Length: 529
Image 1: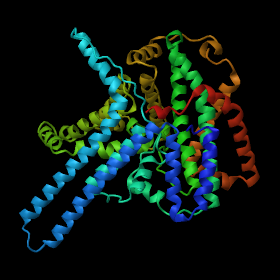
Image 2: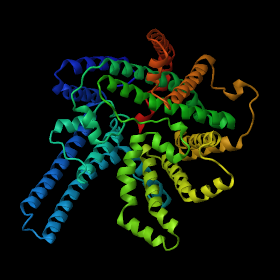
Image 3: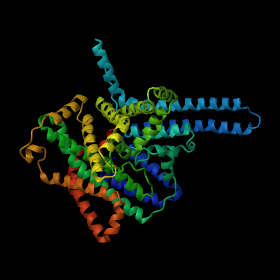
Image 4: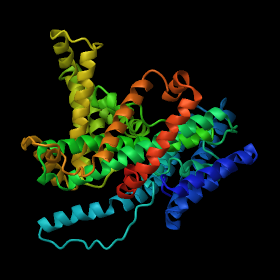
């Protein structure tokens, strides 16, 4: 179901009415029915896969919880008679049993994700090797359609699975509650990837209709529709043109296309988050926030703590930390300290970062472009980590104050420029084409003589100027949000009728310009991940 369709608006209205009409103890059932209906629109076959994920994780977590409960009961019953060795043996045996259960469920679900998302890519790489060896390649006759949101709901349920194994949370005994956690419509296609405690705490509590939640939620939905339908969708046409024809444009035009892409992808993804978070706010449900003004970041590492926050937190918890703290990695770090203390301290983190970022790139897309994109992000973060003592010395020598406005502005602009260049790489097509775009930007320095030569893809200036004005408005809103929520600022600084006029104008702009742009731009960009 398209989030920016009339169908979704009708779905949302019916959902809100039904949600507040039923007794509060049944509200989560309304969410489950709505989620399964929302997901079934993508195809009944897809529902089967999400049911497999929910059922396998439910069965595995309940069985692990049973093992833990039995162990706890045995230890309590034999506290006085069991020796330390017996208690240790029981704990080790049960941990091994829980590990095998966890690994089986993990293999099934990561296997499903890999089958749908990476099979064609894997076969292509095998065929490349076979061709180089003079052998016949594999005939790729598989016709696979990636189930909607499989990357997001798989990671979310895997996190819950591992948390139960680590005994961070207790297993949920009600299968239908696990199914709702897996399939909640607001986040199943693009996230956020929520922790079990946080999301279930919101889904299963009793909800009361509050006018402020309704008002603020609708306002946020309007803002999300504006970002997606006006800014992102208008820019999408220009960006697609530049990326498809970069070889025939000047380097400056190609660079402007990359700049527009950075704005487009932020407006697109954060616009989605505003729409679904706004609807959830109407329902008195708080989703995990996925953005915190990422383009104000002063480093690449900070940017990834503020962009797609839930994905970064997932990789940090379930990939980075387990690798960084693994015994073999810590042992390697201790050995490296014999060369130099700082060297040994950075080795475990470096190894974990390499794996984390290559995996992050592969998660985003089955292509060498995305793998290279992830690797480059990781290399920059690792280089900055190793060079931190050197930076500190030079900042002292040059009398650079971290708090100064000029230095912070330089850091923000530098980070945005680096991110813009990196973002180009996987989005043009193949990795070769991505490097071709880089080459065009860096080597073709022809200065266009007119606006038309600079931006030949702009055939009508009115939509372009509207997209620019929208981007500037997004910047202004972000600046206000650094101090307080913009909705609170509007309540404090404007009266009711002024706000009505503002949202009426926003509605007209969305309908008049956004509707036309939506027909050319397609769906949300992160749906493909």
